[in-house]
Length: 414
Ligand code: ATP
Ligand code: MG
Figure 1 (cartoon, protein in one colour):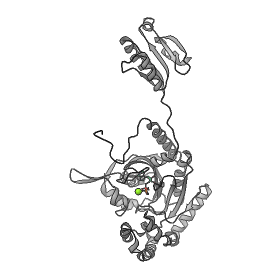
Figure 2 (cartoon, rainbow, N blue to C red):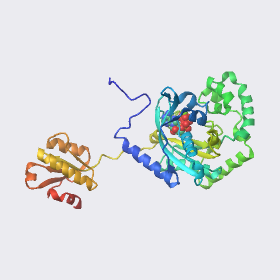
Figure 3 (cartoon, rainbow, N blue to C red):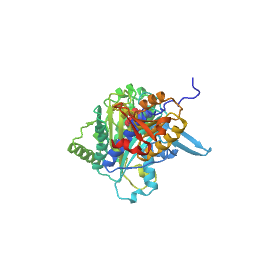
Figure 4 (cartoon, protein in one colour):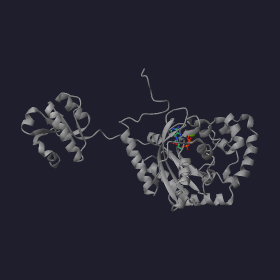
């Protein structure tokens, strides 16, 4: 047993996988840019109250899943469990409400939640997220949803379905909550412990509970969609029109309520049936009240978070083979020094280069050059040095030829 292993629920991303991650991140950045979203990077930890207030005191994230620590025994800090609250904190703090609106931002973040790890559910995972801030208009909702869809299209994933709903606004939610509470109170004895406490603070979350019994009990529960005020209703209809006009297919699911307190109107999820209970791949919604709840100016917004690990589990990506332009294989001490000089020169030509750092035999070096996918090997021996030359072997065609050491660049002119 080694003395140390990575903390439970965390993963090393190993060299065989990092090229896939890099490609994925670049692809996500390019998709976001194609919609006019710019990257933002916020700190890995924030004031605990930002999440308590911005995500919601009664959410699973805040009550059960945060990594919180006291800095020097005084200041309570929390590792980022989600991306939206930090972005809105930054929007307020940096006066972005005075910039041209909408402000369209995306992020690629390590994210931390103390959950029970399983496939597709980790304690450190990565989110790609986007936020469109400054517009109340349903076209902003449609754009954000299309950005999410563009990701699945680009990664050729057709096993996700888009579900949309409206969770209304504080105005229409009030009377709906009364109705829903009345309905749920009849079954209070059968609800799970979590849902019993949800009933008081945010009864709509009971609809979202993963407990089978709770799901059964809420099958015929009244839904927000039937209680929307005229403003929320027309917002939902307009969104549907935009999605239809852009040929985005969706299913209305009145049970998509999202776990966060700050959501208003549109809520949506891209779900898959391929990852067991890790079915949500991308989830988001509108949060018109968030900025003000954090002490900022009115700043409506909509965004989503998309789990990159779940995206990669669905996308079938394989890493490219290892690749090196040239490997210098010296066989004497003097040749080793020349190899170092030549390696530096080849790198300045923009080539990917390696040379021996193990004092290995020529045979072992040839084997290594093959392993690192080197196209050429330059062999430098006592004899070739005497002639100021080196032997170049093309590892693909097995052809060999000698060239002068000063003519290094000619290798690529052939
Ligand atoms: P779930 O219902 O699976 O717990 P969630 O509702 O908590 O998901 P969100 O808070 O909406 O998830 O986060 C957005 C996305 O981040 C999810 O759709 C998912 O792809 C990803 N995600 C959330 N939690 C984890 C986790 N612990 N490990 C890996 N990915 C996660
Ligand atoms: Mg969760």
